[in-house]
Image (cartoon, rainbow, N blue to C red; front, side, top):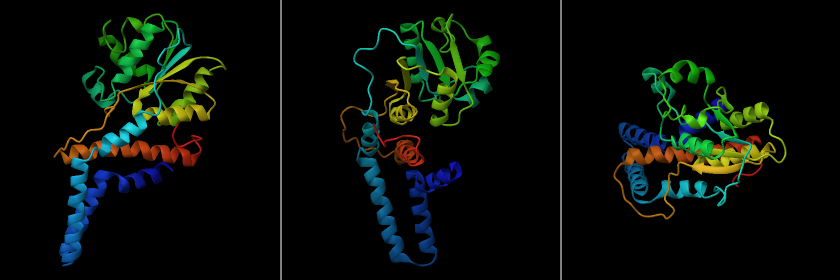
Length: 260
């Protein structure tokens, strides 16, 4: 199923669609299908203009990011904090022997903030191996390091590194922590990813408190034309992939509803 979804994504990713259209234009010219090539080129340029002028990316992100919000009043105490992975660049980290974050670093910043607020809560990180942290990075860390500060001292921290997807993140967390009825757990992940993660946990009978971070869209849409077509396409790829993942999870029964 993973191979199938990867192949579908290879074809349907917005950036790849543009590449395919350009290839088709070139093939049409080679075979002297000039009228078809002209129409296809016009269509491709029109799409490029739409992507550059309209806030399509912001609109799609906004529809995801406004589905779930953190409570206006946070609970006075919680049993645990679940921080989903995806915020560290492991290849660069291992190369330089220090933890390097990517564009989703706010997940770790939020984790540190919540850890200070709830000193007695379990802290569970997915996508991080305890052995990597202990052997490769703790030796060069200090009390101000993002994942080795004072908020991580004298408390229970669990690292679940072997999962390959959001679904496996949630399953591993449930299997290892065995949350009981009535326990309060906070879920930390990017706002665009929150819907899928929250619904996955809910389908397993685990009601989490959403704490979305790392927003990619403004509250109010605005027209800001940009000629950075490739940048726009890469950003569109990311949000299209999240919407696609929601569809796949619903199809596979990993979630009970498409969106919250």
